[in-house]
Amino acid sequence: MSANGWFQIALFFAMVLVLTKPIGSFLVRVFNRERTLLDPVLVPVEKLIYRVTGVFADKEMRWTEYGFAMLLFSGVSLVLLYLIERTQAWLPLNPEHLGNVAPDLAWNTAISFTTNTNWQSYVPESTMSYFTQMAGLAYHNFTSAAVGIALAIALIRGIARKESDTIGNFWVDLTRGLLWVLLPACLVLSLVLVSQGVIQNFKPYAKAQLVEAQTITTTGADGKSTTQTIREQKIPLGPVASQEAIKELGTNGGGFFNANSAHPFENPTPLTNLLEMLMIFAIPAGLTATLGAMTGSRLHGWAVFGAMAVMFLTAVSLLYVLEAHGNPLLKGADQQVSAMHSGGNMEGKEVRFGIANSALFATVTTDTSCGAVNTMHDSLTPLGGMIPLVNILLGEVVFGGVGSGLYGMIVFVIITVFLAGLMVGRTPEYLGKKIEAYDVKMAMLSILIFPITVLCFTAIATVSSVGVAGISNPGPHGFTQILYAYTSAAGNNGSGFAGISANSHWYNITLGVAMILGRFFGVIPVLALAGNLARKKAVPESAGTFPVTTPLFALLLTATVVIVGALTFFPALSLGPVLEHLLMNAGKAF
Image 1 (tube, rainbow, N blue to C red):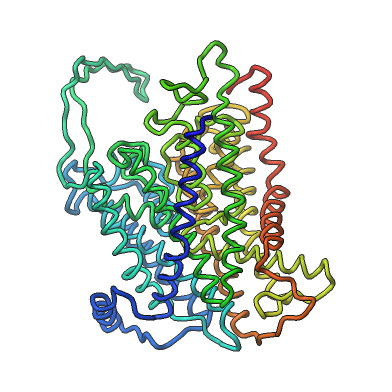
Image 2 (tube, rainbow, N blue to C red; image 1 turned 90 degrees about the vertical axis):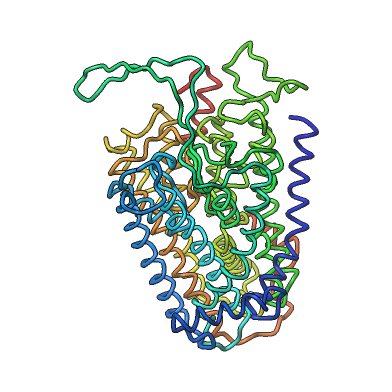
């Protein structure tokens, strides 16, 4: 650890804090259809889109209509991506003549990008053509993020409205999220990334002559050995910057290259590293200010932000400390920080980022549902690797994904208010709405889908030969690889303990199912909650109303999130990273 490392973490959080209110205020103007500086250019485009698609912008939807439109759009988009993958060999922009993607992998990838997960069971540069990356994957990076924002705005409207049967128009919210928020921001950010060295081209892969030829011997399925001499290396290129911007801003996370944001063509400098982390947090943090402004309780928005900030700062501090202390099994190795050495556990990390920025990026990407990585999570120390895992297990509500983080946190707000009501013996209230049995049931249903999905699939994979066949390490570390994979899938995060070989029929199919359950089965109760809240009458505050604008509320909300996660997943964590840590201190590694 070093003062410089702590300073960089503090600087990042300060910049997020500064960006939160202006981004939140802009989102309010966009979705309230108030005037913005972009209107002269974008309003005619918006009207043309509605005219061509037959959308009646002034017709609002009930929550059931809103949910059906969201599912229909996502389902059609999923099928289109699957077809692109299965036919990419005959489509343009394929200079490396890559073949069609296998059916099970195409299924997994189509679901992954539709659900904003971006789990990648493949090596992108040797699997996906430029056309598939752009027209398929990058398209879904935009639309899945816009869907998440739309769902969050719909829930906020449900909280803010009184005696209303509608929560907005999905097609309008989707269109405005794309036109006013994601596309303009990514256009500017892509150019900034290009200026820093992130590549953007359509050239065939470059070839470089090796200084020394390499002899490689491989053994085929028939048991015969083949020896070949390699004299040149292929260097993948492509339209990276345009995908990198939305990958981070939309909390998608799928890399153009297998090394993701550890690759110098995606993340070449400390400045791009900082910028990419800010992009990941920008909209999720801004939406807390949007919540406060649209509900007329700005202090409530800041209370929610405060709860998220406490959990984020705790996680990044723990991860930094754990990684800076290094691995006790490397006796005699210099793991102390110095002017010439980052110190600590540098396995799987980029030297140009060091311990602090690796720990910060790992926390940022798992507090949100991004999943982009600049360090390999599988190489973290046992307890260090547990921090990103716990971040996801908490429900991806610590700022969370674009839109999904906020509506996930509001679900916990409902539970927190309910618990507070039980403590004082009164009917719980939330911003002038009575919280009744139906609301609590929908909130709990949304929360329970995630742990049921994670634990059931993990248990089955752990005791089945097809599940265990994918792990690269025995014992508790192998168990953690499986647990992390299903946690990442159901939490729509997409990062992984990369030692697991997930490109198999078993993992491609089951992880795809987990992604669907985590995204769509979890959001339907949220929309039902929004519709029910919108229909309620406003009730005046009384002496018994529990305030949701105070530090006490933020503390209680934090405790609710942590306790639910701890009680649900503590046994699984004990069998994985906790046990591995104890065995490591006893001198055993996996």
